Each structure stands twice: as structure tokens, then as C-alpha cells.
Image (cartoon, rainbow, N blue to C red):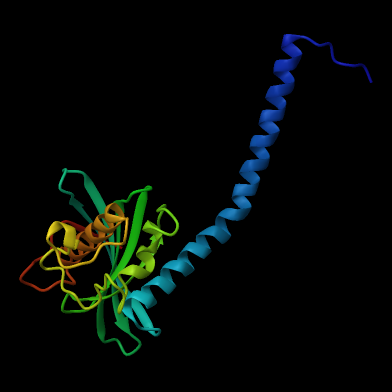
Length: 208
């Protein structure tokens, strides 16, 4: 086999060919893994809803997409899952809420009962520092130092350093503020859906 002449044109052609082949391989691998990854996310969400609603046997009866502006005027999107138990009795809602934490996006799933009190929460995604901000997955749970379970965010939850009633994670005030903001925003999104009390009314939302 004749050896290719070492020239700029041949080098470009070879590199282009390698890039095309590698791109094809990556696209194929992405195609193969996309399905399992999506299924894994769906399972994590389903398990998360059971956790935050404190109920193993439940049904998501409706899903609302709510948009509202933050304090800086940025439009944010929230997913509100209306939930009933196996007998069809309304349990409340689970709300996906995302804020910017210390290390990046902090996505929280919060469960509220029909009175608007917090049933539970779980972190769906975060990029917080291990051993510090990452403690948010436990710190605010029932019986822990920053326990928010059973609280009504009608009056926004804030850390004690800001004059609030919730103890911040040690050495992670930024993460704590971001977490509580996500919870407060989730509550507002809940109150802006048809699932909320009639006195609040429904604002801009899209049902799926």
C-alpha cells in the first residue's frame, strides 16, 4: 500500500476523517444511552415525588408548568405535580424549583399538603461542595438542625443570620439561602396553580 505523502492537504483530510468518524461514534453512543438515562431520570423523579409527599401509593393527577419572575425580573419555570393517593384523595402537590447555589444550579423537589405546609423535600440536582453545601439533602429534614418540615412558607423562610427562623448549614450560608429561596419560590408556584385555594386564583400556567 502506497504511503500517503506528508502534506498539509493530506493531514487536513486525515484529521477531518478522524473527526467525522469520532463524531459518528459519539452520536451513536449518545443514541444508545439517551433512553436509559431518561428512564433513570423519570424513575428518580417518581421516587422523589413519593418521598416528598410521604406516600408510597400515589397518582400524579395533573402537571402544571408555571412561569414567574424572580426578584431580579428573570423568568423562571416551575413544574407542579398535583398528587392524589391510591383512593383518589387529594394529597397536595410536589413542585420542582431551581435556584443558583454556591456551585451552580440547585434543583429541589418540595412537597406541600393541601394546607400549604411542607411535607418533605429532596434534592434532584446540585453542584454544591461535598461536606458543606451538599449537606442540604439532610440538613433541613425533619428532626435536623434546619428542620423545615411542617412549616408554612406563607411568610418566606429565611436563615437566622438574616433574621429568619431556620438555622443555616454550618459554613454554607449561600447554599442555605439558595435552598430556602427554592422552597419559597416553589410555594409561590403552588399558589399560582388551580390546585391552590380559590382565594389565590390561578395565574399564568400551562397544563399538560
